[in-house]
Image (cartoon, rainbow, N blue to C red):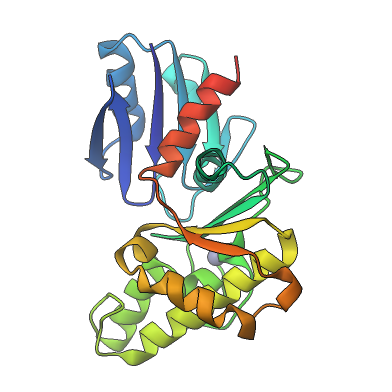
Amino acid sequence: MNLAVDIGGTYLRYDIYGIKKIEIKNIDIEEFLRKLIKKYNIKKIAISFAGQVNNGEILSSPNAKKFNPKNLGIPYILENDLNCAALAESNYFKSKFLVALYSGTGLGSGIIENGKIVRGYKNLAGEIGHIPYKKAPFKCGCGKDNCIELFASGNGIKKWANFLSCEDNLKTTCKEIKKNYEKALLTAAATVLTLFNSEMLVLGGGVIKNNPYLVDLVKKEIKNYAPSFSISKIVLSEIEDASLIGAKLLLKEKK
Ligand SMILES: [Zn+2]
């Protein structure tokens, strides 16, 4: 059988015979996958990975642990997790022009243009989390200190909470964290809408799913951030494990 796996910043997800499994990510990924391959006689694997990947190689991974999929010893597909998620959202919402903007451990986007993933020269298009935004008093996983991800992601919230000695969620008494998060998310949403002219913008990821008021906020406030001609339909992701579903779609797509 074939296997799809989603390696995120916090979890590793996969399913066997339709039963979903989740592993907390302090495991040795390579060893763990090798055991799965042996146990279930896996012939091919599709991996959705939270990091920069190209041509079957992990280039960098600010939020997830690196490993070498070549060592698994079977044919594999390796794809960026937001590209996988965007593919799944495009399939779910039946939209060929769609941007998925996810705020989870990190902040990322995946773009679908005429039904295809927009990749760029090295499969690095859509790295919205690392666009320059504002200086922060700490560094991003990519090495810079001015990424928008430092304000609008789970990791960003944690870093600010640590810096200001507050709780690390949006209900924290440090109103500054919540305000900065919302502004940065709106800026990211306006940026992808303006750049890619999508039919719909799907908001997802752990922070947004845990705080669904953010979708209403973006819908209401986007007019103050993006030009009116760029604004399209904005929705909350309705699928669980979109990256995993996207990886499964890739297994079907590529023979
Ligand atoms: Zn960065």
